[in-house]
Image (cartoon, rainbow over all chains, first blue to last red):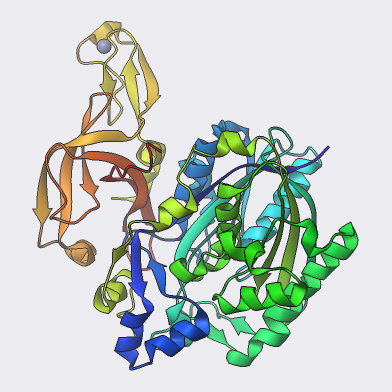
Length: 346
Length: 135
Ligand SMILES: [Zn+2]
């Protein structure tokens, strides 16, 4: 019997900062940065928002959309690279705040930007084997780029939650395939506020190698090709990388268009690829096939092949769409932004 | 607030769980173990509030203790939940936006923290009810 997405929910903080505003502070040329990254603005968390509050809002949205009884959720896994506690799980707070406690298992996942899709895979395994009824997999981050670092232009905040199970599936996960190696392209040591990265040349051995390997691996396993899919989503650290990798694999710009939210959102790390999938499910029709590949530095990629079912129509208006969450932002200047992000300690 | 004291109230604070008296139908938040109207004939059961209500009155805080310095100016309001009870909470919006009668809904936010190395307290605050087509 098949396993898949029973419901999903997203959350994006209302604040945005424009790339021009950040560029102004550092004396950079905004237009060349916008051209290079294909990102115009990014989301910024409120002062009292963090990975946990964002994960809770996304999870509540998923429960509301699917009219799911939270007591049926028997596993909560939250993927993030910005868990507020080094020791004390994000997932226990989430489980309590959605009313799923105490009869469930919970754990936090870490794998740079693909911790959330790793959580989906774990839920697919547990629900598929019948060990649990429903599993909740979340990707949530309030990413930090050091002031003045290139990452500061894209590091954004947001979260997405998927409820995985075997009954009342809105999108069947027909298969998943991963590709993982030890690649030092991006890291953050314990206790350090900002990540370090190998610089601009890490795209080739990191992102492109892993995404293409996982994607071709999955299509070979299934015997599918890009033209078998209606939509595709690739991890979006910026707008350039997913556009380029789609082309390399033979997907068109039409395939990736509905899911390419990074230009108006920034990189939500663990939420990035999952947000693209949520935006795509918001408009998908029964029978559509969707191809997804998430990437996490360190490095690995998780590819998924998804079939949308008739039940998607029942989920359509249950909770705000990604487009609705992106609408009506409040723009802030750099000094407000620095206050929101606790960037005073330099 | 101490860790044990917060912990005891955690379920209520996270999910706006109060009580209802089944005898007279009144709702209570924070939860009560006895209905003041019905006294000994109280029939108290837990009740999860929907989290929607309106601003009865508010104050804009311009100077705060060190823990809340970053939030200044912020809004404290008395909110009347649709089910009836009133509670005091922060409303997250600009001072220009707040008004008496404003429709609000609950959100999950950080309420504060003990210290940089201490517990982080989470719970319920309110935001303006945006019209995401009634979602
Ligand atoms: Zn009573």
